[in-house]
Image (tube, rainbow, N blue to C red; front, side, top):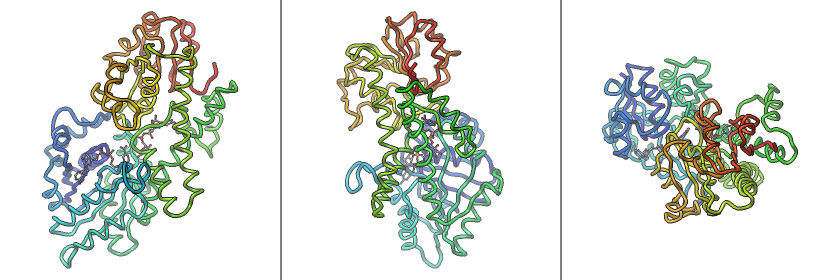
Length: 464
Ligand code: NAD
Ligand code: UDX
């Protein structure tokens, strides 16, 4: 029986290795974490992350060939293949603060493997890391290898998107496996290829060198985010000219060279990956003395910040240049639909701007808890504090409760339950102050129909 250990039971480690256990019943998968509460949740009826389809997969294999534990050392000792799937956040202090990836978690996990392993291991870099991180991991591992124990290192970046993780893992566009171009490297690579090809067609499992694999992950995220910033930049031109951003995106996306995906204008991209990984690329470019390259990628993040600010300014301007003491219903706090994840969500920035304008913000999100919202809004750097958050934020249990008596609604996340056929907008309108405004930051509403009800509608990328 192949024995797999995954270090890091987060949004990536949990789903990606649960899917391996689900697809390969003869592979034993042990997912470990230092965070006891997280492991307890993985072992309970309420998993620590909300992801459509994840419960079924975990409940089907847990206790059979899928295990969650904080006993990191034993799992390392038992494993043949070890995924390192720990967090790699942007550094907050020190060299490269605000840009470089914090590799402390990667190093700690790697050192643990080196210290406790009693047999040879294939160590797989699953986390998103700066190009050549595998070299540092290799150096640490090799310093601890001997004639009885060898470590081989692979890069296997993860491309899942939250909200669609199970489908992305079950039917991926591709799986990338990078290795050292040596006989031992190829042999290690083959072990992982043999796992993935159990359910993924061979031609979708792409093999390449370690550094290309590491860089491809940063590149893919940068290119995806760049498309969003490009359409968001165009949305500003649309609002000023009478062009309609959905029509422009459709016209451009039907060109087969451009393609239709990732051209949805929005209040700004969020999530734990895009900003972090672009800044990582910016830092790498600076370190390589490529300032023009760094500036090019940095502009993707700058445009995203601009989009969030531009949308807030539009709200304030439309509400007669003041939102002081006005109740504003903010629908959606997660960074996208079908996830409870709020990392880098545009809603955090929007709320902070609105609080600074002294608005009273009534927030509703189907999957984000009040505690999480308050924690996000009081994080250092957000620009608000506990007292102002307590005073200006109300977390509601339904969209109707948030909208009641509000002067305006702001759609921040594209949850299906906010769409026209699901939320009764007549009922919402009747409960609001008049004139009743809606700001659609996600292009999910039918503006003409809302205007028939009596709403004043402002949509991102549209002037009417
Ligand atoms: P996460 O914060 O949800 O999970 C990481 C987990 O690792 C945490 O639970 C933490 O306690 C644990 N951990 C840290 N150090 C450890 C150690 N030494 N031993 C044991 N456990 C340890 O992070 P995530 O969202 O799962 O992201 C993990 C990596 O995958 C990051 O590099 C990220 O960039 C990348 N990635 C994330 C996504 C995504 O959608 N979230 C997609 C693709 C790639
Ligand atoms: C992203 C990548 O898609 C995935 O491949 C990688 O592994 C991790 O990072 P994720 O952040 O989970 O995944 O979600 P994604 O669907 O990419 O959305 C990111 C943000 O961009 C969200 O805030 C989303 O609402 C926004 N977005 C996406 C747009 O504003 N417009 C679009 O057209 C697409």
